[in-house]
Image (cartoon, rainbow, N blue to C red; front, side, top):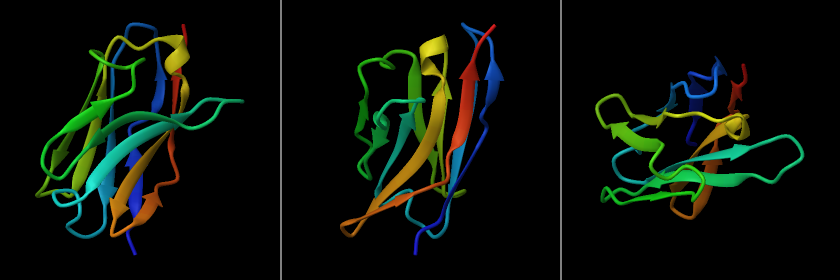
Length: 115
């Protein structure tokens, strides 16, 4: 069973930055596809970024050039660096791991972008 715990959310002003963390149980960060998704109120969950085991990354169109996904294999942690935040980035951000055909989710961390 894979467990994922997100942290780092909070209130930030437009134009500001935040870094989210996702701590994973077991040594899966380096060998599986990890990702961040988000869900805003009244909207469907959407892709933010994914990081494959081979280092390839994929980003949602709305966050390209502003957000960066990375990992620390020794800490079994995945990060999402978010810069130039906008009010429309307000959402609950979820960490995801794809492992042997199974999809695992954390409970999410809330990011609010507001002045």
